[in-house]
Image (cartoon, rainbow over all chains, first blue to last red; front, side):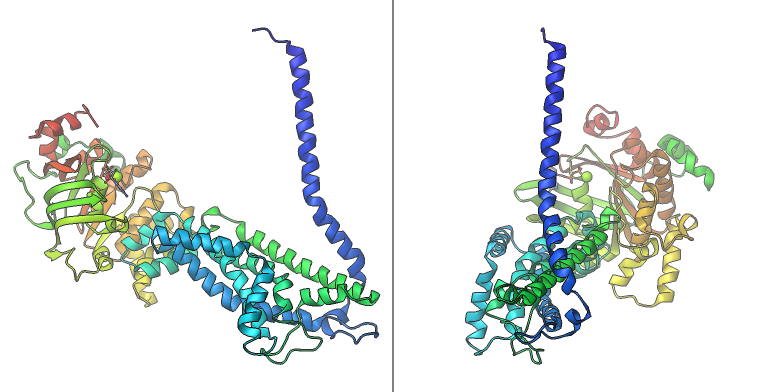
Length: 286
Length: 282
Ligand SMILES: Nc1ncnc2c1ncn2[C@@H]1O[C@H](COP(=O)(O)OP(=O)(O)O)[C@@H](O)[C@H]1O
Ligand SMILES: [Mg+2]
């Protein structure tokens, strides 16, 4: 077999260099939007980030200054409510799928959870509007928390199921062989082994719904003042950003940028936390 | 006892017969039985994995189960503490008595059976989220024991019995998974001993270990039989010869031959046993 050795070699080198270049450009294209977003937020929003922003209510129309304190606290309240609904149901559902149930029913449940994960988030807002807001005749913190909690359920359910299935069967058998009951084995051995993975799933779900705006539009609605009751409308960071961004005032635009910067930083911090959690030895990472 | 560590693997049935530590060949069936297995059959779905096995497991002795892979050794062993029931679609027939108690009566809780019959697995499996100390007492903890003094006593006692205390007594707070393979397997033995079972089942406990770690486990098995009845599955015929008093040879789910190890290895009745032991198949 005759081949033009040197010609071949040069051609291979060119191909290799080309492939490297394309890979590099793709990598840059992936990172670029993130860098761009962050750069934009800092340029436009950092100047409005001050003590007032975190401690004051929004200023009345026309007045300069004010902050988003109520929206930040409101977001945290909504997340707490959403977590109270989404975390227990999602985690227990995931445990059920991984440890109990028949294969046929479980594959149906899994399919439904995947469908729910694909439902546009505004749908949840509409559903809760119909079920809660209309029935109780008013926007409320409950409704907002419920909408976010419903979004969290299938997210947490699927990640919990996946990390629980990653726990080697040998640990279940070891515990059962000691005469430990099935549910204690699941809680104290299986879930404990998978705890970092479960917590990671919960944090990512919280970060995801923390930035949701659409499901809050017809549920929590937003509020320019402090919220004093869970049955009253409540402010939330994404809602406040939305309201300010579409307003005609330059000062509000700057505050919207600042709010977005705070939101992105929060999500960023959660992701860092997840990275820290998932570091360390692999056996207990799952 | 240190000299035993290196010596054990080389000891053969013949030597032990000369030393008189193996039971005499004429003791065909064990005198006192911990387990009495009668007409045991087990199915996985439609497939019959154990076919009408009857045998008695001698008290305070080591019974080895040998046979080619897939012949049902693990299934038989797991039927002795109802672990096989964890596999979906299994079915059993026959009876298994543990010191006279029917393990499969409708009123028997499998968790109680497993507290009485401990199990060591082929792959050592200390819990990765727990320290060495926590691993040993977790069985007691999860079964409701709260008394810290009692737990500490049982911790030391179990680790001593598993010949691990001296190696880990200063490292009880370190993760169980930080130990070497052989130490992890002895940790699992300590964990099983901590709940004070009546019997210990071992499914190829040394097959993932190096020769020195294997020798330590074999010596440990030898020491444990003073207090416990032991049933062990092994792939390794030399090992069966070294450690066991009785040997059961299984083939295709059936018990082909069962008797004192010395007899099985030197003068088997069945042609199949002889062929397997001399390495003609399996
Ligand atoms: N979980 C299972 N499901 C179906 N069949 C199984 C299962 N476990 C074992 N078997 C079958 O039962 C037979 C005995 O297996 P096993 O007891 O593991 O044999 P051994 O331990 O002697 O290698 C084999 O034919 C195997 O294919
Ligand atoms: Mg096996």
